[in-house]
Length: 314
Ligand SMILES: [Zn+2]
Image 1 (cartoon, protein in one colour):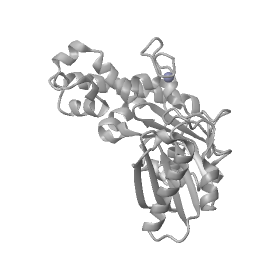
Image 2 (tube, helix red, strand yellow):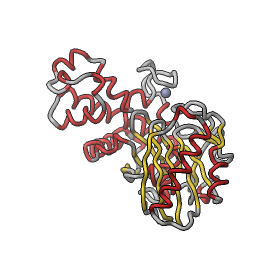
Image 3 (cartoon, rainbow, N blue to C red):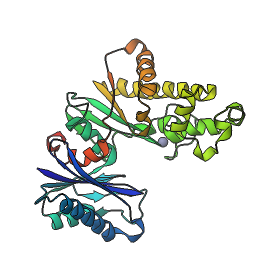
């Protein structure tokens, strides 16, 4: 069975052809033509898919999966709102592709699709209850409960990034203060460095950098190079991550927390101290919850996984 998958983001669109075992056969990435509106997007998806089908000499695809970076109504195939590409509000992105490819087409938001990829192909296969957390510029998530993807009453479950962990803390994009993502997301981590001007002056690494270039990756690198300020920020970040994660654990009692997103690529430098910090932060509520790293390509695999995960939908 061949599946055509799309990951539609604000800056780029990734198209993949894969099979039902989660093997990615070919990938094509293009810049999102976001100034041209709805039909242009549908056309772009059709052209990219056609190119992949042609160059891999595939006779027939069986399913299409679309991931969109923003809230969607999966049942209706509608983009509910579009934070990064204007003009897509309430657009049915599924119908045009269904008509063209004559196969079932599935739509899901990026966090839920990544969660599904972890369940279908990834490290969460054996867990009936787990929470997926994406740690990148912001923080998102997805919840698997009783072996189903839990979407909530408005399709908005899993917005872990907007759980306040520091009342009166830094302002978050959502309007609240001290949200998990405003502190522990990439932008939040960088913010805690950039606002401390005297510490930047004393840092051999950061004093030579432009503030705009200071991101989570640069901070972890500086820590690896022995920068004391970076070490402090990383330790603080690990602590706040543990606070947020233990809040989630206490509410949902999952078997595992799976962590993906750009910051998860820090690997052991993140996971080793984080596992210890989570254990410590559980205090008297200690239990065995696995902290797992997400599979590397759960974006591409997410588009495949959503076409195969019907039994995991409520
Ligand atoms: Zn928020």
